[in-house]
Length: 181
Image 1 (cartoon, helix red, strand yellow):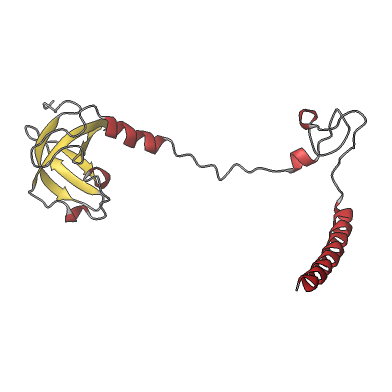
Image 2 (image 1 turned 90 degrees about the vertical axis):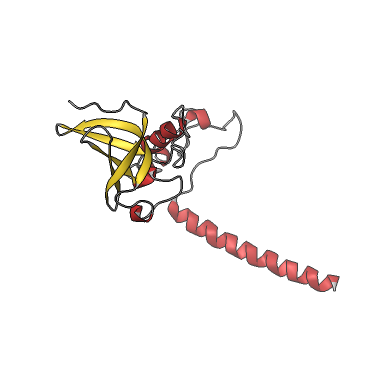
């Protein structure tokens, strides 16, 4: 087994190949290569890694991950947490790397969960006996007015009556405007 750098070690490597998703860096002292994904090349957005590095360039990298996949050791590297001029660690406590990892984990897809109102609308209150709410949400007091949902047929009649009332009030507004002039 070759001597690999320790996790979070910084070293200078040579760019072996550049792909559309990142660049492979030769690790000094062994035959292994590590991948600098395009998201770890710069703190700015990188669309084309070939605009950042070319084959044969010397770059400072930090080893940020080791993973065994299909009996192969995959090494993840980062350029954005290392000063490319001096090789100084810009993230000595790995806070930036932890934040990046947390961002990846917190995404959840809620599109399959649908909220239906039928469950609430078909309930009957145990306190007052009205439909459409639970006993803990009941505003019914002894001797008070009872409230319940309006059936659909009555809704249409109430809506038409409301429109007629609106027309009468708007006519009343017009006459008051005339008086003011």
